[in-house]
Each structure stands twice: as structure tokens, then as C-alpha cells.
Image: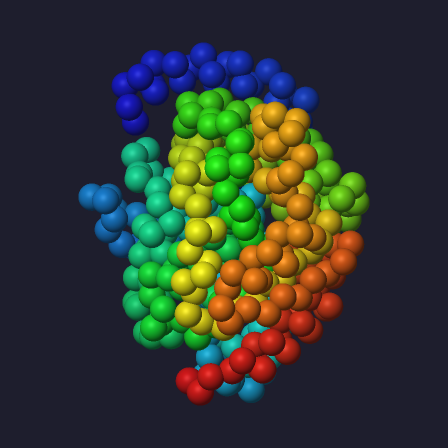
Amino acid sequence: MPLAFSRWLPGLMLSAALPALAYAEGPEYGPELQGFEYPYTLKHFAFQSQGKSLQMGYMDVAAHGKANGRTVVLMHGKNFCAATWDSSIEALSEAGYRVIAPDQIGFCTSSKPAHYQYSFQQLATNTQQLLKALGIQKATLLGHSTGGMLATRYALQYPEQVDQLAMVNPIGLEDWKALGVPYRTVDQWYERELKVTAQGIRDYERSTYYDGRWKPEYDRWVDMYAGLAKGPGKTQVAWNSALIYDMIFTQPVYYEFKDLKVPTLLLIGTSDTTAIGKDIAPPQVKAKIGHYEVLGKQVAKLIPQSTLVEFPGMGHAPQMEEPEKFHQALLAWLSKTNSVP
């Protein structure tokens, strides 16, 4: 951890602790989400990266229905974990797919190093190493939110290893920085992340993800994120989160959608208004970003082999809002664009 970082850390911890006291009644989880139950057996992949010994938590779920010989790799979003794919894992497994659901480095059950150069290329490389270790040579990618940016980068980096690419309300369908959103330093992101509370997460997700709506089943995922953020590893969780936000903001994939070479599905809840940095954007910038009812159509035109499926009235996570409707659309497309394994 940098010397300057360690000098001002105690002060930030003190200031961040005060507003969090009101939410102390919620669960707390360890720095690698110890204490939170995953829906399927959690395994760990140990590897070396950037001179460090790291591990990725992941689930490897065999086909429960008649196996079709194909594998789907699930890539979670920024405020999500592999566990939040629970209903999708079940639906895909029942349909005959082997499902791999990893937690990326810096997230959830995986390592949170004190020093790490985060890039989507690095996370793609880490994931490719995991798949190689599991003997998977080719797979379909399904990325949600930030996972959509990662899945795009993976498909660009390893096109010969990707059968199909599907993205659920991916962020990065626009370049916020180029559109005028101010830059936050890593230090500013860190200070912000130290103040995360369950109520703050819930309020943000209700207004941004779900157009003012809320279902009780979402609370489990709020507790997951908040419990990690306020647990014994809260400083390393916040620090890695800050580095990841900087990666998201400064490494757009928007300009390379035109270069995708695989069949691509965009699954878009049109009521989503997610946009990184919208909270500090000038009013005229804030007004023009995060419009998924427009962004889905625009990006579908940029991707050569694209299919757009919209879910009117749904928000950032249609796979959680209306699982049956979502999986029906996903499985129909996967079957239609099926290539021989």
C-alpha cells in the first residue's frame, strides 16, 4: 500500500465511520466475502499475476439437463458477484450448459491486492487462464453491467475462443468522459467507497437500476455488497473498488464494438439510467447520459452480428427482475445462433 495512502487512511476511516453507524445492524462479511453463502459449491483458482499470488473464487456447475457440450461463462457487474447469477446458472444448467461463474480479482470471494494495475485486458487474461485450467477451449460469454465491458474486451482479445457474446444492460455503451463527465481521482473514489452503506446502495439501485421500484429479494444482494464494504477488510475492499472504478471510467470499449467478430446479443432493460459519474456531472451532461432505451438501439447498429432484445419497463438487471422472461429470450437466442462444439 503506498506510503501516502497509509498516512491519510486513518482520517478517512474515521470520517467514513460516522454515517455508517446507523446501519450497523446489517451483516458483516470477511474481505473475501467469508460468511456469505453461495448457491453452488465455491472453488478457488490460484495463479500468479503482477508478481502476486492471487486466487479467484468461482462456481463450476455441470449441465443438469441433457448436456449439449457447450459452456457459458458469466461475468458479473461492479455492484454484483458471481452469486447474483443464481437464477441464470440454474436456467442454463437445466438447458444443458456447463456454467462457469467467477468472481473477478478485486471482487467478492477473490483476492483484493494492495497494489494492482487494473485493466479489462488483465481481467480477461485472468479469466482465460481459469478457463484454460478447466480445460475449456471455447465458450459463450454472458456479461452483466461492468461484466459487459469485460466480456466485450475478452471477445476482442480472444475471438477464436468465443462462440457467442451476450450482454445484459452493459455499462460502457457510451464514453462518459468524452461526453463531459468530470474525472474522479482514485483517492476521491476511495473516500466515496469508504462511506458505502446498505441504505445508500438500496436508494441508488432503486432510483437508477429499477426506476423507483424495489423487490424484497434484492435486499440479499444489497446486504452482500454492504456487508463486504463494512466488514473487517473494508479498507482493502474500498481501495480495490476505487481502482476498479478508475478502470471503468478511463478504459472505454465503446469505440471497438464495431470490431466484434462473434454473434452478439444485447439484452436491455429500457428503464435503466446507469451512468458512471452521473452524480457529479453538470446538469446538461447528466441529462444526456444513461438513456438505455436509446443506447441499446445505437450500439446494436455498431456491432456487426448483433441482435437487440429490449425489456420495456425493466431496469438494470432484467435477469433478476423477470427471470423467466429473460431466460426465455436468452436461451432462444443461444439455441438459434448455436455453433457445433
